Image (cartoon, rainbow, N blue to C red; front, side, top):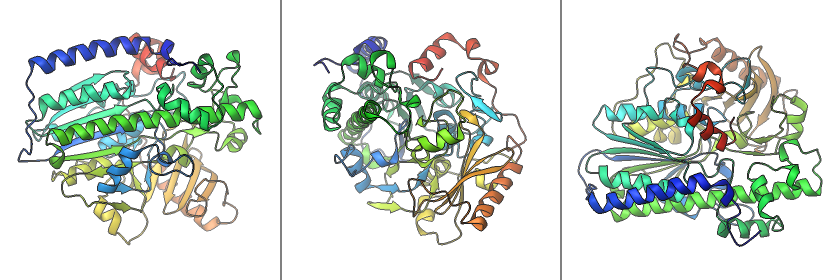
Length: 506
């Protein structure tokens, strides 16, 4: 690897936009006095810090290489963490929509549909008209709301629920600067800011200062810049790097080295975002806003690095001819187990909630912690499709295990996940057919299929899935959100298509 940034040829448009925004921000800082009111009386602010594609096992101490997230580690020590938070979908649009509406994808409508899906060809649907979001709920109660996001799928109905919104495909420090400038100018009243960092998502392009040491530690320091650019998108045989989504099993030496390098780029990207989260939290302290701001940090889904390549080859359902990389294609825990941390006025310090929770709980929990009325539920919604748990209840509850659901894959047949305590079923939805049963307490990596050994438990989870399946396809009897461009990517706005192509979506 050269001494320069190996990803410069991939980031020209981003760098130009960043320079423009830096200039605008500097001028505004000179001409516009700050509105932040330290220790303002009244309702707490809400700061939602989201990190796209962040696996739970990359937050906190790791078995090798120490921590990647010292900022988040300190944040967790001072606040509250959910050790078993689960995404309701394995990709961005339906999962963030679930977190910010408190409802499952089949109710909020943002995502994919059909018995077989291929988002490379089929555009997803937008958020259902009339869906209540956390931002809209807060705006109706006097909050200023703003969204700053670097994944364009937030613009499929979610962003529109914020009074101010800005999409920028910026690196984490520059997106953080935009959000902080907005907070500086808006914090004389209660505010709700949503900031979504996309650096951990493909293509992974961390700064050289962060990725070089991790590549060396992984024994993968010998790649040239063109090969690293290929690995940012999982590899390319044309430059001498195996494409990991098509690698033969067992991995040979070159493929194993490429996997180690890809993991190092991912880890360095996590570290980069953690630094930017630190800059935001420090500025809140400097401005005297931290004591009256509820901060939540979470991810929409994780990422797969060939953990289930054998099952992927056996099931052979991904229409892209890719196996066991990325996200959106299955319901394993490397995609569904996500971090969720919170800190703010009235929250306990150093508390860890061990019981399983869903990201559908995020919006109703935030509303409760802010002392606001609950978000309204869609009519005729099945109880298990709604988030209504609160942290204190989840920590203290000794009652029956909740059933947690996940759905809405983007590539392949309609796969669902059903959780009850440590038990987890992965199944095809229609016709309902079990694919695997795991006990996550004994087997967190989901390596032992227990269908044959646990027929009663298998039937219980199949029954739960069948009850869920009897809910109207759209939960409330309405239509799923309108598909963008009638499901045709080619009819979608050129600007949005370009933004999504930059992230490897279409």
